[in-house]
Image (cartoon, rainbow, N blue to C red; front, side):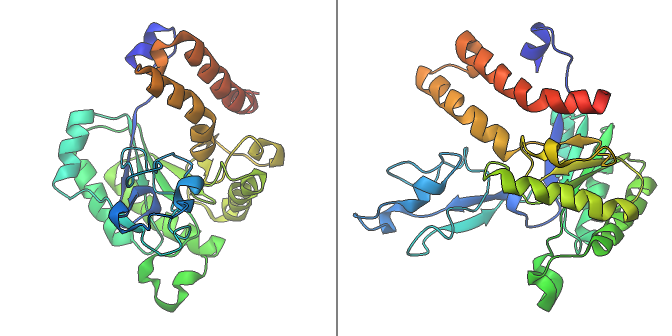
Length: 286
C-alpha cells in the first residue's frame, strides 16, 4: 500500500477478514502425500486454481484459499479440510497490531451468537472502523438440522441480516452487506455471474439499511447482467482476480522478486486489474 502511494495512487482502505465460525473462506486443504499411491495421477493438482498442490508433496498452506475443489477430486478421499478460526483473545490483539480501516466478517444465518461475540471482540480492541462488512449467502450452517442441505430463502437471509443490523447499530458500526451469491467461484465460468445478481434482486426489498455489494461468483460477466434498476453499491472480485494474476505471480516467483519490482509484469497486472475494475467505476460514478 505504501508502494502504491508512491506510484500516485490514492491510499486504499485496509480490510481484515474474520469469521464467526466454520467457514469455507477460512479452511485449508490437507493430506499426507506419503499415503498417495505412487502411480496416482494427482487430479487434486489439476483442479487446484491456486496451484497449491505441486507434482510432489502435500498442500502449500500459504497458497490454499479454501475453495474445496480438491476434496472430491481425490479418488481415495485422502484430502480433508482444516478450519482456521482465531481465538477470542487473538482478535483484539490482531486488530491493534494491523489497525485496519474496515473488517469483513463472514457469517451464516444461524450464527447470531458467534457474530455477537466477534462484535464484542472488535469493540474490545478499541480500533475505530470506517465500515464493517457482513459477508453472508444463502447457505445454512451445520447446526441447521434437517434443513442444513437446503438454501435459505431471501426473506430468511434478510431476517438474519436484520438481526445483525441491530447488533451493529448498538455497537456503533456502519454496515456494508456483502451478498455471497456463489462463494469462491468467479473463475469457474460465465454462469456463476448469475448467482450474485439473482441474490441482489431477491433480497433488496427485504434488506436492512446499508449498501449492498455483490460477491461470490462475480467476474467480468456480472456487469452485463445488471439492469439500470439494479443498484449495487460495489463488487468484490476474488477467484477471477486470482486466476488473472496467477500466471504473472508465478513468473515473479520464478524470478525471485515481488511482482511490483518487475516493471513489465507489473504493467501487465495493472492492465488486467483495470480491465476488470474500470467498467464498474464508470457505472458507479456515471
